[in-house]
Amino acid sequence: MKSVLLFLSILLLVSCNSSEDKKVKQNNEMLKHTSTKLSTGVQHDEREFPKLEPNRYNVAFLIMDGVYNTELTAPFDIFQHTIFRDGIKAMNVFTVANTNNPIMSFEGMRIIPDFNYLKDDLPKIDILVVPSAEHHLDTDLEDEAMLNFVRKTDAEAQFITSHCDGAFVLAQAGLLNNSVSTTFPSDIDTMRERFPKLDIRKEVLFVHDGKYITSAGGAKSFEAALYLCEHLYGKDVAKRLANGLVIDWNLNNVPHLIIE
Image (tube, rainbow, N blue to C red; front, side, top):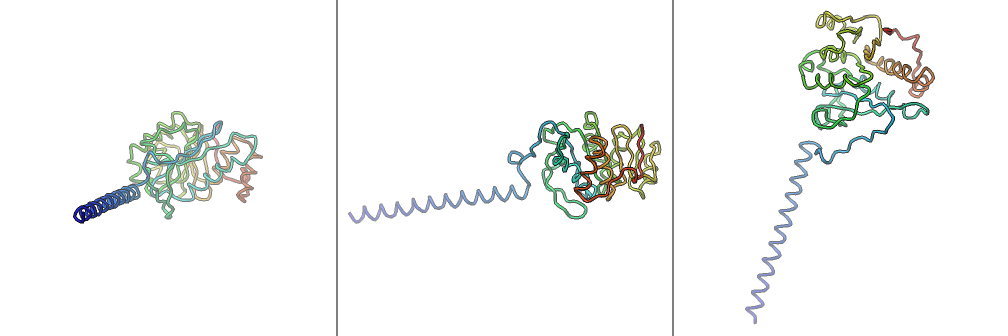
């Protein structure tokens, strides 16, 4: 009898240890899986896409490492605030990039893109905003996937806008071949040298020619964004958007050029 009890006790102990080992192994596998997810970025099937309300303009901001805060956040603020104005077709604003991983702005801000234009099914884009980025005068202009995305978007978008050196991307993509444009003041001569056939203007903070609006960038990105809102919604709405951000807005006081 004692032998039977001893045998059962040993069997129970081995069984408990096996179960415990299995549980530990499962926990380790779970931790390993979680660690892998954190190190490789957000998984595609677990991402949360922004909710895009119907009957609004879809406004996409093209971002990449080295994007400058002001050229991104200034128009983003203006356009996002349209949802607080009644009686207008407001804007859905979202970001697009060539990755699911966080983008690092030039100033160090980490931004998680809403859409990956290389992999995701994108919504129809009505307005594309191209903020300036650190390498828009060199390596970014060799990124054919990005340039092709810009060209593809241009085929259906109502407006394509750039701020500061974002104009170099539009020019490299061939969008400005028949349009007047501008860029960051100190880079105008560089842009003229690189694209000698383009009509690039100085002494203005933004140019509107057809579907293209190019701006000098910096804090003046606010003015270019407010101008587009005035163009779409009228002076009163643009004025109220400006007041909401404590901006003294009067189009007549902003050096600009509109090509009729």
